[in-house]
Length: 112
Length: 111
Image (cartoon, rainbow over all chains, first blue to last red):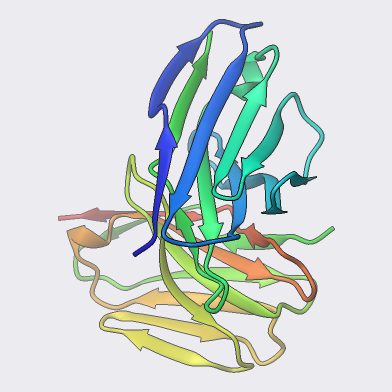
């Protein structure tokens, strides 16, 4: 069966520091992968999606970037964090036939 | 741009009362999905609706997709404390790879 792993679960970073969040999927090949951000008490904002290795689409201009170095690995990065980058980051993969999104456990980022 | 609006943002109900959340899009959707997020957790898929006018039921939950495929609703009958969480709709627009999520409705059930 397919599983999705996301880490770290929680992190507190100072403004201006770099960021790297990692997501891996097991049990499926060539998945569509997504990064969402959820601000406190808010909805899900799509940040990036990827349909294959090296293929990244950005939905909103921002301080973040994404990379997909391997088929089942999706990384969210920043060179210099801003206060506004705080939030709950969710990685997800989309099941091809049903269209269902499967989310990781999430990474809660606090920028101080 | 493509947006999915969802109301209400918050809903407090007494246990046993019914609950409904509504989603609307200005443009026609290919399909719509519903997710539930428990406090502190991640969204979990509930259901997908594809056909115009479709109605699906899961125990006390009833999901509807409008005839014009621009709106949808989730109705919970006789809420229980286990229903607490935020309910999101997510719409897929034709030709897109992405689901656009509504802002969610946070449900609180008072015992």
